[in-house]
Length: 448
Ligand code: PFF
Image (cartoon, rainbow, N blue to C red):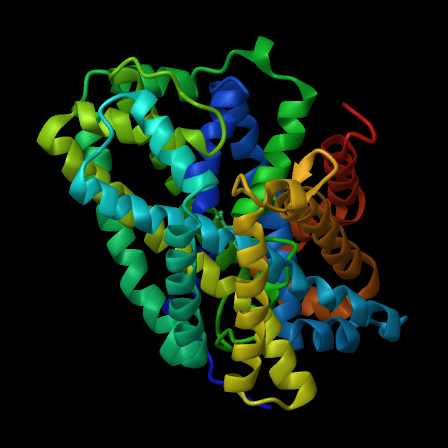
């Protein structure tokens, strides 16, 4: 079945829209804080720009040569073991799982937009109480916003690649750029900006542990939406003349710049008010709101701008999480887009509801398995095991099981022979081991 293709700009914006998300604006700053600032940033930059770009090229290659849904592409492009490789395509289920909790978090962000308009918490204490009340008791509000995200994402996906995904990214991504630009310019003029720069770019190598390196690799994968069939699926709708090497550089450079800018904005504001940065979700939902309050009238404006920006970033990523599974159903089962979209969105919606209730105090014990809530389990299994595992499948597939001649023909004109050899070497011998290290470390099977 033929579907509409992206325009060249549309593709870049859609891929950047997928990559730039909560991972950049919410997660990157807090892991940077946790792993000691500059040294972590440096490792992250190296991994995002090298490992990230190498894997991005691999995924774009599969999509461009495969031109179908993820499952069919693995099956069709494999030079041997086609029936087995087909199963690699089932990574498309992973983003749908991620979407179930991602949607709940976007819901919190939407709620914080309204809080920014009404009344920001005046102390960290109050801020914590506000967030905990939302998280642990207020399931009505969470359900309401989760439903809004569900409706929005489904409506966009129903419109297809060109009129849905491309169009929304063409609107939201430039707006996101403008909003982050305003926040950044504001931060530059705040005294603590230089402290934020020092914190992020002055590496203290004594803080650099092997765990930090492993976390940086995991973060690079998550933030670039790799290992989940997303880039592969989007690339199947690439226009013929696109240069996949250039595209992957552009995608990872923009994604990295957004993470750095978001980090600088957040640390500037936090440091300026001497705020203690809370770990994890608390950084954005607890520390920041009370810091915004301290900035007075300007703070309200900054808060609205910040939460709208992160909501836009989240929505464009959320859409990308649904498309791979939708395209799979359309292509393999001859379904209409409508039917496929409804099946996938109900799946993530229901799972999201369970996720959401797993944080509600009255329901938490029933939805707890071992030491983790259902919410934590989904995030843990997806981000620390399935995403790196998907990455391993991609590089092994491209490195060992695709037609080498075809790859050479496609890539040599774009990157030259030497670089092609380096790329091959990396995806065959380096990246699979780096990703195995990520899984071992994060699951605690082996701590580096
Ligand atoms: N790249 C997104 C981010 O940084 O927030 C996260 C993401 C997108 C994860 C798409 C999974 C996904 F399928």
